[in-house]
Image 1 (cartoon, rainbow, N blue to C red):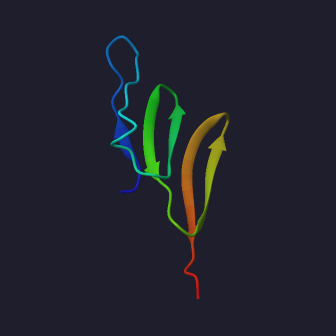
Image 2: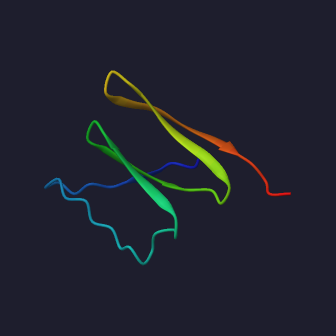
Length: 65
């Protein structure tokens, strides 16, 4: 699965070591959950919401010719 769960501390703090993250990535925060997704080299990535909540993340990937 592309989306990786990111832990939030008991005090509600989000701590990340940016040196360990992928070079191109996105953090998605919704309903008290945080997920990390590495962005593909050649793709269109869209975040679909429904009633103000993240419903799904779509990837439309391509390859350079």
